[in-house]
Amino acid sequence: MDVRKVLLTEDEMPRQWYNILADIKMNPPLGPDGKPISPDALAPVFPMNLIEQEVSSERWITIPDEVLNVLTIWRPSPMVRARSLEKALDTPARIYFKNEALSPPGSHKPNTAVPQAYYNKVFGIKKLTTETGAGQWGSALAFACSQFGLECKVFMVRISFDQKPYRKSLMAAWGANCVASPSRETKAGRDVLEQFPDSPGSLGIAISEAIEEAVGDTSGQTRYSLGSVLNHVMLHQTIIGLEAQKQMKKIGEYPDIVIGCAGGGSNFAGLAFPFVLDKINGKKVEIYPVEPTACPTLTRSPFAYDHGDSAGYTPLLPMHSLGHTFVPAPIHAGGLRYHGMAPTVSQLATEGIIEPKAVTQLAAYQAGVLMARTEGIIPAPETNHALACVVDEARKAKEEGKEKVILFNFSGHGLIDLVAYDKYFSGELKDYVLSQEEEDKFEACLKNYPKPQLLKSR
Ligand SMILES: *Cc1c(COP(=O)(O)O)cnc(C)c1O
Image (cartoon, rainbow, N blue to C red; front, side):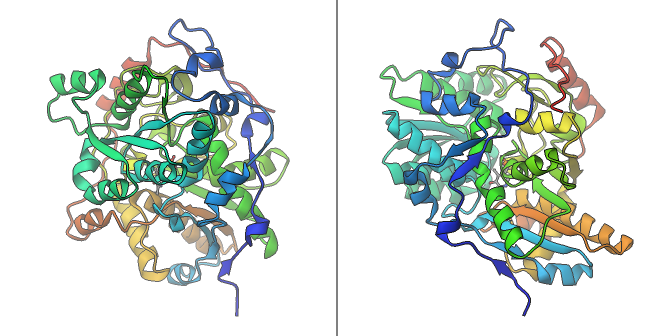
């Protein structure tokens, strides 16, 4: 019998994260004066130990035992050969996926929520605030905070708050407090509601609210936590790709193509960055982040300096951005409705080391349903975007008659997103493609900011 699951023992778990900042050149984040910010400027928002990680250029960073101990609740995650999917596609490609759906909240997000809660705890912080799109990050942080005895407050994007009630229940089960954003609890939220009382919200708005609440705690015991985009988040997620490399090696395989869906970039980066290192060192591997055509951050927007949040509280980050005022169409992949992209992922895209793709919502669901009916697991709407690209590549391999090895990240399950599947089955979901009018808007939004340099890492 051919192998289906490739497993690692707990002993074989990676003991260090891979930090891509050791291997690429980056534009610095800028303050309001247009000058590079000093790490100290972030101290009201993040604990110093995480800020140090954010700016570190050490290639390997040790994972604390207390973090490994919690990660072993579900890690190492299996790497699975999608034999039934291959068969349905009648492809000569061998398709493997890392199953990140097995964590208690059901996605890859606890890979960073757990270390973030740990470092805050060690630093003496009592409460974390955050934003959440589809609710996966909020539930991941709620879970992590419960593991380390921290309080947790979550601002959840309104459209998901209404569409995905069960994520609130998860957060409540783990003891967190979740409110819809825009809310009346912060100035950032009130300002939006005054102008747009029916605002569906956006990740950018919710981030503004969560930062405002953290910085506003005069006791100094509250900090903010971000589930994607930042360097330390990408760092924590690399455990996915480092495990996958060991698993590939065990069965004598190496991927020709590595694929992950990309919202802020973290699950993609987590799987891909260790392979990016291989590529930098001369290996041949194609690496595709996949985004929705409704929010085409890497494929349609410029590499620019922009804020990470809609109110403009955060430093200017060098990234592909649709503009911090962009409110994407209400697609169901809430986790992919972010205006920006991780600066590290953006930098790799500008250098052509990775090649971004965009897929439509309906193509994504079609691929997701095929996955459900072959491999059995029901993917999250975000994960479906990676799957649409996998299906494309498997078909291409068939046309070319090539035995390609495809590795993708199964970032989460869709058991709490079944409403979206119902809508897909009843024909209510549609495709959105960014219009020229929207494109003009984000160009206007970004026009007055400094432009990042086009750096070459090699
Ligand atoms: C949040 C989320 C994403 C998108 O976020 P990234 O930071 O781009 O990974 C993708 N898939 C799932 C299941 C998510 O929960």
